[in-house]
Length: 599
Ligand code: WT7
Image 1 (cartoon, rainbow, N blue to C red):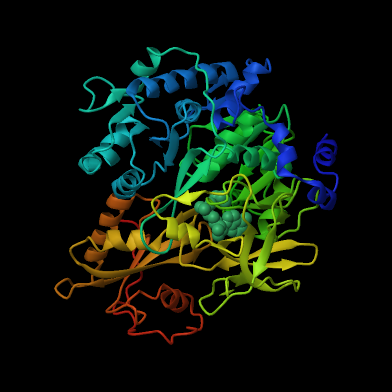
Image 2 (cartoon, protein in one colour):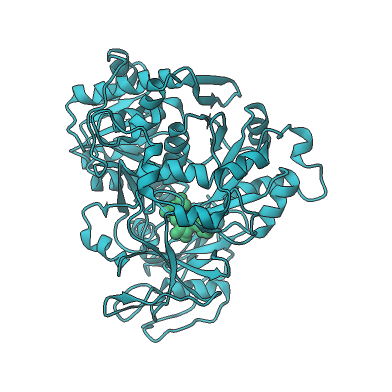
């Protein structure tokens, strides 16, 4: 069966690429009866219109392993109820609804209801602490929030006074004696009608807001529009080999772009069944889901694969021996470099290679992939999706693409290294950074979108990831902005200054490490370190807070006063310190104690 599906999708990469046109692909979408494109309509309504309402949309696996299925008809009804709730609360078109939720079926009805009702959805990561949550809701002018009582009380209630525009907080489980100024999601939705007509939606209307981290300033709110669904749909077919009848499992957290584009939108537009894992990561549990739910296409991340590799070291019986993984046809990875070892391990343990895919919050959908129809090139991210034009650009001294008289310089020579750029104009391209038009414009030059990633391209058009051109940290697949972490650390009364880097880690790719300059009256001892770590964890949440702190007397600065994270990183890794011509001050660490673990 495998070979048949695969060849059916892309007989050959070159001809698919040469004949591709987004305009022609548009016919894959249903389109709204009254015109336009609406993501929610493509994900739900179209299947009812085509008579497939009874197909299973979601297969929810609870923590205890019990399984509950939700049909497309049910998803349409539930999301209709939520769409009516938004109407009756008086939210205007384009106003933003935030979610702070783990993976559960109400997340799907909230997202789809919001999109069908023409409001903008912004997901937040449930492992964020109160500070990142408040900052993003402030920046995004959150009008409504759907969350649980526990998450609300821990992460939102303490910062609610900062959010005057947040009018409606809906709790999935308000319980007896609910917190003040909250609404009951179950009561509101139960009272609402279960049919909703999606009104005409302009393909260029905002649909989604995803926050991502930069190296300076506030988090960036990347705005995506309804026509992005064309790219979600098409890339899921080309790069993830999705077909009718598939059971698809995307393990990404719904608080990030992968969890939205491929955890929710893309599989639903294909009318396939999506596994919703409501539990935590555990190797046995994950293999159990793959086997018991007969997952056919699996989309996961290198950190998860590394954790599975650890659980079944070489030489021990492979999990496939204990679990029947024979339904699994295609495995893909995203978010961080996929080392060749993981590809080989996949072949041994799962009986399939792992296909790498590359993209970003800003690109909205997969842009480069090891395609279904191609043999996997271990170590390479793959080749651009048909309809996407990529290039390697020559870099200047700052390590970013050099722009001379408004022009970029494309490197053609195989093997040359530079910044990865994509020709602007694919449907899921972000349309702005919220409130920051200049930052947005700065991402483009000469008709190209500059990704901030360094890559090399080899013969045949295969791209290899080299590194980031900036200071952002990738930990367990999540982007973390050093500036956001530094700002939180500096709110601690003992901290004079902080510089934050990613320290390589065999499991997570990188962990957040902070160099902290304490104020003179605070001795840099173990107690202080634990206190600062605990403080950062409370504010930022465990996923963002530093795992390690090292006290230093001073931090290296550029003449313009910015902390030179590049130098901190070079010193940490024992690398040559490179160009330090703009270095102002630098002194080594004052403490020699081993760095502390989580308190
Ligand atoms: C950054 C984007 C990918 C969507 C979810 C994360 C890194 C992504 C790969 C890959 C090496 C990768 C890049 C990119 N990245 N995929 N296959 N190999 N690095 O989106 O949080 O915006 O992160 O993740 O550095 O720029 P994001």
